[in-house]
Image (tube, rainbow, N blue to C red; front, side, top):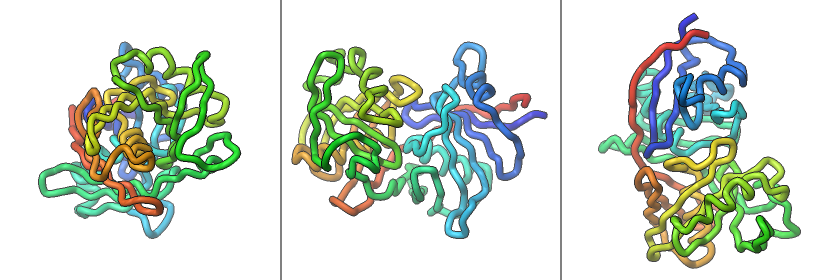
Length: 276
């Protein structure tokens, strides 16, 4: 059987997107790993599946798999590509799209300039909800990793994030500590490790070592988590421009209990078919 797919990216964070509303397939972790290989497959950071919703309040169900075959709860850059995909494929004509994910419901809005705004919901800080092992909630935590003691912020944007402040995102901290933080035992489901350089109160630079992937050109939930952490620490003011290796995202957050809004582009690269 041939399965149609679309290759897309959000600021260089790239995806294979499959419509399982009008097509039907059962995918295995082995297949996903094969397709994710950049030398022998399609190549991607994540595979995105568009499925019918399981609740009447949602328009679609959104599932995300890393290139290693593991399923994850959320992907912000993927969410923007999801919105463009369902419109391009005429699966919906709505400009505001309600989507269910394993990390909770999100709302996607297609703007007139074709930029996509994603309502990512409110960030979570309670350690057990991230999940992160700590005695009590705090804005920062001490984390022992690689023989160093770091001050980090832990945030859930529907998926777990650890944000470390650095003086320069090019200083080699990601290369030295990214994989160690990702697999740190205090994060029982592993974690996305972000390294943020504050430029001014509304501008920061960010690199992210993504759980199950490695460093990516952009991470939407990572940008949200970094902006939220910076605002909580009194270093940033909303709206925040976050520069990633692949480009810029705008993040807005009004404070505790309020949703995080992420705005950025979504780009279609090509259409293809693969044999299942």
